[in-house]
Image (cartoon, rainbow, N blue to C red):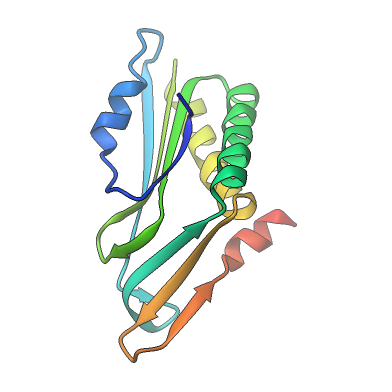
Length: 145
């Protein structure tokens, strides 16, 4: 089964965590990205995510493979939502297991940072004033250079 998933259904972080159960793992690190109600001073009502699924999965798998190679981790798993998401819903989950905590923290950060830069998933914000806007991750662009 793929370690990088795109889903239109609500994410179940605990179920995903169970998939990484391994007796070698002594550390587990998780990141959850939640839909928030404000961005850059604008009031947000909900988000819409779109993805180029085939390429997103291929690039996501590549990022996970890089993390497994670069850091001393046991395993990693990512699930990213698409579709309309309401305030408070989980947009993305990154789970990483390792023998010790340090590599799991490093790999988790690497995965989410690279995902934001490289994976073709787009976010559209819907605002309380009726306007919408496609969002570019400016911090991600800085990181890429």
